[in-house]
Image (cartoon, rainbow, N blue to C red; front, top):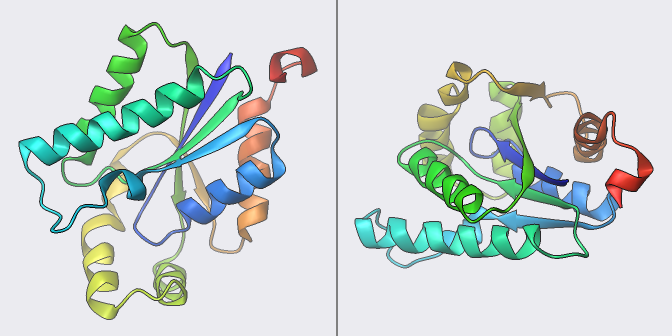
Length: 176
């Protein structure tokens, strides 16, 4: 069965970096970065932009989840604001279209100091960093998904742990 690994967490925690590492070390995998599904100028959440973002995400996930050459799809997303609603619609549509996959939702967290350090390293300005901390840092505490504290970990270590967790119990045949 196809694996959909959904990495959620605060802005700047390192979701995209971890996803890139998963794809680099795990064969037959693909990465859908939600950031590229919503690059619009000016960016405003309206019914039209929500629809187009959902359709962009759906098309990319569908294409990878139905590709014979890909077994694992990594999707990075933040659920704050109206994004969780968009995610739920996309997943429902994939399932309604009889696309079969195992959904693995994993929260990535780190200390606030580490989150700020990573955001600065990623060249985010202080306004964006402060907004991200205020809006997203504690947002994921209400969810009961597997949570990995990445504070003391390198991205490749997080990627290896996620691969181990999501492939646990699978035979070699199932992975291929």
